[in-house]
Picture 1: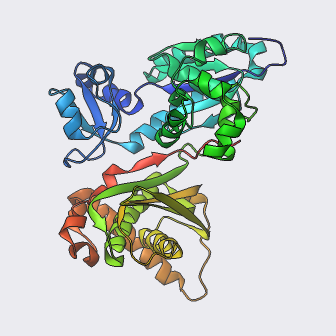
Picture 2: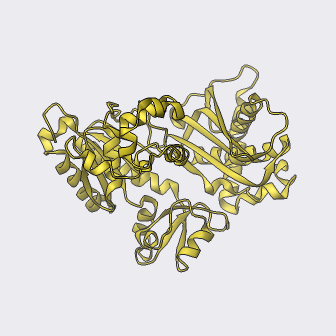
Picture 3: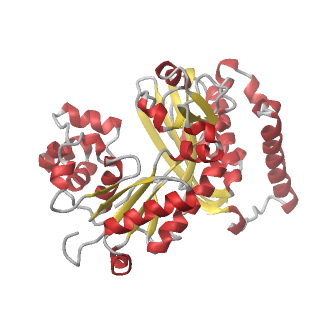
Length: 420
């Protein structure tokens, strides 16, 4: 790739990760269309991952169980097991770290690697990518698609370009040939809302974005329009973070769209408590506490707002998360409102066993331990007997909202967004 001063960046994306891990533990899943879902018992459960056979039938991540069945009547569903996926994510990362000490996670199944200083030992970026793919197959049993390029943006584009089990090389000489004809949403961070805005002004491909005047993009997207213009033109100098800087899981959150609009504080408290219990239980399961709580809301006009609050003492307490999330909502200062969707997220994670608890001057050690023991006891009861076996009184006040009260299994693991 290019001259000796050029960076060599890899992006490794484990193919159909959740589904592939499940197939390793159940050979039957290798022969039938299957999908991993949050909660199979819920008709509104969603597909978190699917295998290649289901993908060929048109099943997509994010489809509801009903939609997946319509596309593929013989599809089989599997309950998500995030603890298992995390173990395999760590096994894969151990392989990456043989080749470089600069490995940056982007979610549980994707990593960037800077192998610039490794090519003298192992060969070109493409050779290293192929070696990693072979190591993953032999040692972990998983396949991966790997993008090799001169920056993180095009390395990510390369891993998406050809699936499954492939290496794609994007250089300064061929990036226009490969990237420019692709739909603009193929570029990282061009989501549905951004795509819609770009399409509205006639930008449909990465080439359209690269050739558009920066001023026009800034007018509709703000400063982010300039960033995307740089990305499309191969201008990205962001570094791959060294090993150990970030944990594999960047944040834990959950969100839901309710059957009816939330129109009063009691509605909001029910859903905030519901989602906070989900997030708190998952944080405990993974052994994390967090120092930042975020609340996302969407009203009946589909307008979205979000705010976050940092806290001094890391927490994985559902009650504490719910209290902070409700305080955030009050900061919006709504009077009359109709909310359609709500999300709660905890980030800035630290390992629970490395986290020292700072005592509140108004609380005794016994009080703190009682609260922690109570929450862990509730989580164990629910794990054994189901979510409905023990619930807060507030969950009984509105059946139309509390039908969602086993949302723990709909948990979503969020990677922190890419920052320049």
